[in-house]
Length: 472
Image 1 (cartoon, one colour):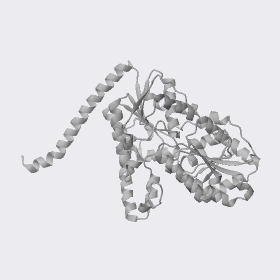
Image 2 (cartoon, helix red, strand yellow):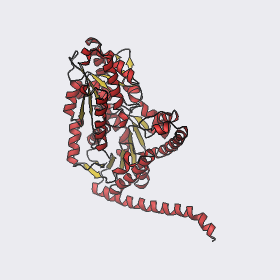
Image 3 (cartoon, one colour):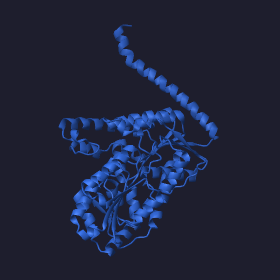
Image 4 (tube, helix red, strand yellow):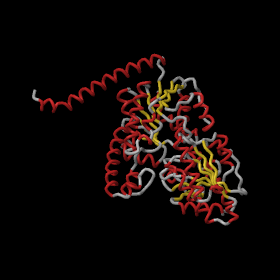
C-alpha cells in the first residue's frame, strides 16, 4: 500500500476507531444501567437534567412541579436530579418550598452533583457563545451519564445537545420541556436587520459583513439544533410562541405538545386588593438577567415620571423583585441601581433579591401595577402570578405574553396591556394611574378570572399525560 493510499484511508480508519470507542462506551453504560436496575429492584429510574436547580426562576418552578407530579403518580420510581449547585439536598428542597410553595418527598430523590457546570456558563465563551455552551453541555452531559444512567432522561433547561448522548449511549427514553428555543427565526431576523441587542453586539450590527457571517453561523447552528432536538421521544413546550419556533426548527409537530408552565395562582388569588390605594407601587418580578431588559423598565419609568404632576410623582414607586444566580447577576443589580441614580429616580425605586414566597406575596399585595419588559418572553410565569394577585399587568408586545396570556376578550374586557417601547410603556402606565378606581378594579377582576388555565393542577394533568408513556 502506498503512502498516499494509506493517507486517503485515514478518515475511514478514524471513523472506525470512533465507532468502536462508542460501542465500547455503550456496553459500559449498558452494564451500569443494568446494575442500577438491579439496585432499584425493577423500579424505573428518572434522570432530570437541570444544572441550576437551586436558582429562583420560573424554570425551577416547572422543575419542582414536574418532580411533584411524577412523585404523585409514580411513588416507587426513583428520581435523580443532575445539578451543578453545590448545596445540601435538604436545603435545595427547602428552598423549593420557600420560594415556590412546592413541597416534595425526599425519600425517592437523589442529587447527582456535576463539577463541570462552568462549561455551560455564557461567560466561558465571550465569542460563539451559542455553539460554545451547546458543546459545553455535551461535556456536562457526559459527566452526568457517566455518574448515572437512568431509564428515562428528562431535560428541563433546554440542553438539547445532551439528547444523543443519553439516547444512543445510555439507551434512555428522552423527554424534554423547552422554555425557550436556543435559536429562533426571530434571532436570525434581528441579525439580518442589524438590530443591536444583548445577544447581538453593536460591533456586529454596524457591519454588513459581520452580520452576514453571523447569519450563516446562526443558520448552520439552527440545522444542528434541529438534528439533536429530533433525538427526543417527546417534547413539551411552554407557549404558542415556543411551539411555533420548535416546530419550524425540530420539525416533529406530532411529538410536540404545548404544556403551560405551572403558576401558583391559588395562593395569589387569595391576596386582598385595595381598589384605591394612597400610593401606586409598580412591581417588576423577573430574574436579574440581561434578556429580562430591566433597563427598558428603568427608562420607561423615567419617562413616566416626566409625564406626571408633582402630586402623582409623590404617589408612585418602582419595585424590582428577582433572583440572582451568581456574582455576575449581583453586579448587574448594582449596574441597575447606578442607572436609576443616573436618571435621578433612585428615590422612587426599591430592589429585593432572592425573596422567599411569603415576602413575594406581601410585595404583590402592596402593589397595583405589574411590569414586564422582556422581548419575546417565552411565557411569563411572573406575569400570570401578578394577574392572579390582582395587579394590572403591562408586558412586552411579543412572545408568550402577547400570544397566550394578555389577550382582549369581549366577554371579559381588557385583562392587561402590552407595549413595545419606553414611550408606549410610559403612556400606558400613566393611563392606568389616572383611571378611576372602578375601571381598575374591573380590569383586575377580569385578569383574575383568566388565570385558571395556568394553575398547578392543569400543569400536573397535562405534564403527566405527555410524559406517562415514557414512565409506564
